[in-house]
Image (cartoon, rainbow, N blue to C red; front, side):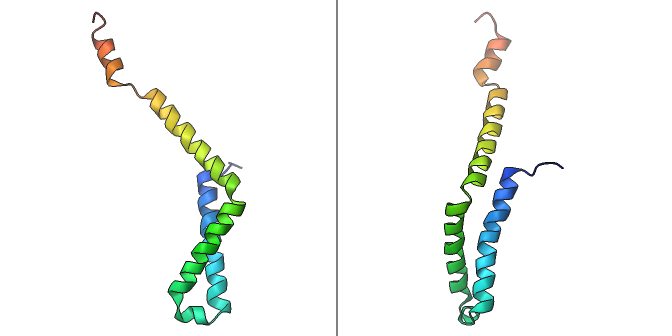
Length: 91
């Protein structure tokens, strides 16, 4: 089985960290059905806390993968000076 990309794993876990508290607040506390914006605000705060506490490893893996891809593409990309040097080897 192919390993899932870390960015996909982190994104899904962050969404779950928001959706699960939102559903719990919405279904178990009737006042939040009327004040849906308050439920969304509390769910966002809870999700952010969960993310900071428990999702540090997926975040660092995602960041590392993004950094490696950007570093590889910047190494591969030629600068204007390199192209000019190749065109005019005398100068």
